[in-house]
Figure 1 (cartoon, rainbow, N blue to C red):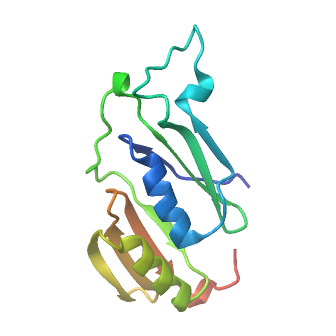
Figure 2 (cartoon, rainbow, N blue to C red; figure 1 turned 120 degrees about the horizontal axis):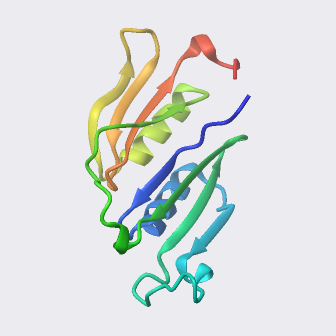
Amino acid sequence: MPLINPHINFNGNAEEAFEFYRSVFGGEFAQVMRFKDLASAEFPVSEKEANKIMHIALPIGKMNILMGNDVPEFMGKTNEMEHRSKIAISAESKEEADQLFQGLSAGGTVEMPISNSPWGSYFGMFRDKYGIEWMVDFDPRYKGKA
């Protein structure tokens, strides 16, 4: 079965955001590549963009990877307030759901506080301080059925 891993675009603060995500999820980066690492005659990189993140990967759990990059200025800005998608996290326990919700929502805007939902799970939604939308869920009916 293929895996689906989220990839997030940032306007120059990908490294800061991923340090924040690492502080919540733990672990180490699998890869950090900067635009200067790809600079060549065919792909010139300005001094202003050299240290920005071209690719960053943070493994989460056993099989997930959160990935991201800074969008180069020549490609325009990414819309930080878009409402087209959310990153959904399925926690392994109510305690883990609380820890992830509290950690990731710090400095952000809570859309739906984490609590027991009408559909039987423990659920909450928010936009983090970087504008990324998240859903955290723990459903005891599916515990251990990954």
